[in-house]
Image (cartoon, rainbow, N blue to C red; front, side):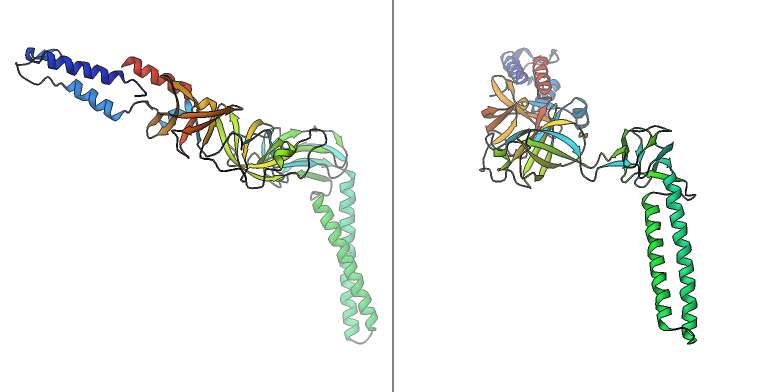
Length: 393
């Protein structure tokens, strides 16, 4: 046997003692005398036997809600090999659609700031307001273009009436139509310029609005500051739109393809699955590394700027019948290597045969099936709990 069940040995000894002194009528567990010849069975023995049958050897009962509070983390076992895995350092970054720089469209003074660092903001919401002379210029151009468009439209209507009455020539009507087209085009240009500058209704100020929904992650201005056109004033990031960028060698980059599976190691045994989305076709001139862009399966525990390690398994890697786990999942119990597998109501210590070790990873040669949910953080705590239960018994 792999585990020594002290409870069963105690019950066996008690049963042997009962047979030996059955004639005396001593009732085990309750020390109550019974008539000579009666069977020495007790309720306590029945309870202990039933309890032993319902709790298999090496089982540690832990409720699912409590396991998270205890810091227990699990990872699904997948087939692979240490030689096939590509280990790389990586950083969590915002995706191209997940971060936006809010800049000043014109020169001006900051007269109002509506959002502070860390506050949420919606797409299109005004974050700050600039007062600028250029705002008045844009408003004047729009008003002039509107007046010219109105005059050209009236002139064209008049020429239509005169041409219908055969008073003017056709070229006069065509000239009026061309003037109206030009005036409308100029009006449209000024209107779009005012909209792009976020011109206020009174034509005195320019609004700085967010391009995406998210939170303010950087503030580079203050109330009353005079800023130039193009200066970055705020930065907004959406924490739900992130990606992971890993640096790999040129040799490893040749083995990686979009769609390859990967695992993100967040620390403390916590992991996230990811998929390779793209990789750069060349290496950086300074770092001599290529960049692999990965899309994580879920964003819990991931923050832009966070550093982590990634394990990439190329699809072209040779197939293996082995399982690779973190070394932290392996525990020694009674001289045997075991892992704790999540089962109904707790975790079961499962003996395994281990193979090669490298980079904090270990190959499982036998004893574990693929897709089993294995404890990678908190395994030592379960081992301690298992030893405590054995000692109590």
